[in-house]
Image (cartoon, rainbow, N blue to C red; front, side, top):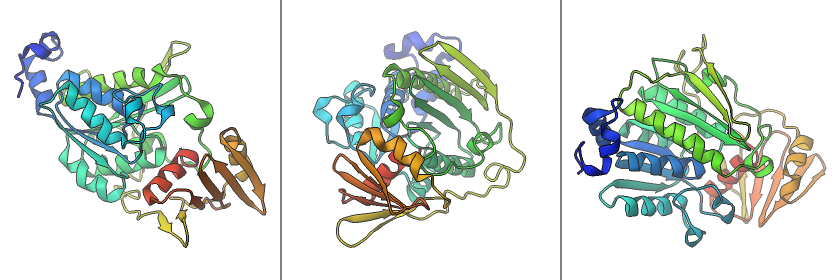
Length: 337
């Protein structure tokens, strides 16, 4: 194990904001990286290089070619590999003595309850708001800090959430949006450096959390547009009657699996929150990605090798994949952002 004054970290250790004690705390910390896409890989690498040498990586997906323009750690040689495993191997090449544990799995209630109590902090590498609500539930329940970060197009936002010291995610976004109403990177695009910029801010915030810095500002939402160089800071207050941090009702942790395998090669995915879905709006959003049509009150889409049939209540049938977790990932990618 490296000591606080190891030459590897000497340029950071001499910072008055850290010092030997802060660097030691980084070396003792364990961090869960939820999602190993662009945000997650850049954040994980930044934390490892800063001295956070015990990382848990969770991601259910595999490396695809369109990931490569914005991720860290991953290369064309990793195409088709589980993201968590490929990222873990790359991190261990940077620091062979680190403890990096990959989980190729969907971050559902059971896994969140297993992993969150084992770490000191959760950082956000997720690609949908539904799973962020789940992480928020788990962290508030167990009194664990986490950092919300999201990116799209040319901008992103981030906020440290420290239970008991500030608002939680549901204070910021009280009501989960209906499926298919939030824009996605698939349709809105993403500027390659944006995840890297937000991940750098997230990693710096993580270091503040782990070193117990007095400069940490829980509940301050930072919005950054990398194209226009505009920044905005908003102070988010704890919401009176917040179902999560106020009433301690952990609705997302209580949910069961939303997928079931039907006859043949069809997997049904249920929405986490039932409600009418604007299929015409969803069709317009998905049209650039493949063949999409509305027929008999349903939306039918062929996106690559995957066929989707979406019902007005948000339920979907997914064909072209065999793994229920992969079907859930596709649902989140196209409908639940």
